[in-house]
Picture: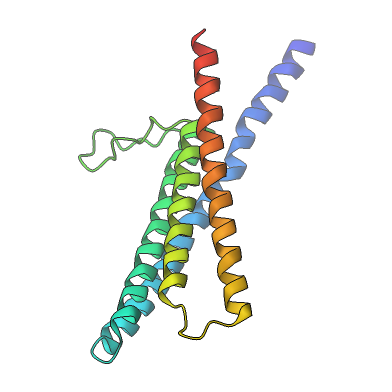
Length: 174
């Protein structure tokens, strides 16, 4: 009797992983929302490129790169998270299956996410540097200072995550 209850409980807990599936579906849909903003930004750039300054074009391109990185990050989280926590994605031997699919564990996913966040933060910081006004106010300088501090926090966090994963990996080997 107890064994049957235990088995039923374990089966329920195991099947509860499917509760996460709508989260990943929501992330898939959010890529479409990002695509709309990407198209909007691209259209704005394309229609104003002849009258825009070089700095404005560079900042616009950086915004597109930023959105592309966010989209790639979302896709990586969707694929890896689904495979880690819910179920393997069975696409057979599809020729377009990314090499990393099925090989990224939770530790690797964390490092890829923090790496993407650092890259996104760096692009945002570069956009801020490109938009520095000739006469910088104290508020502008303070805002820029905080962006640098936040970016460095991301960088330090990324390095610490990598060190912790290396130490954990070395510990497992011994």
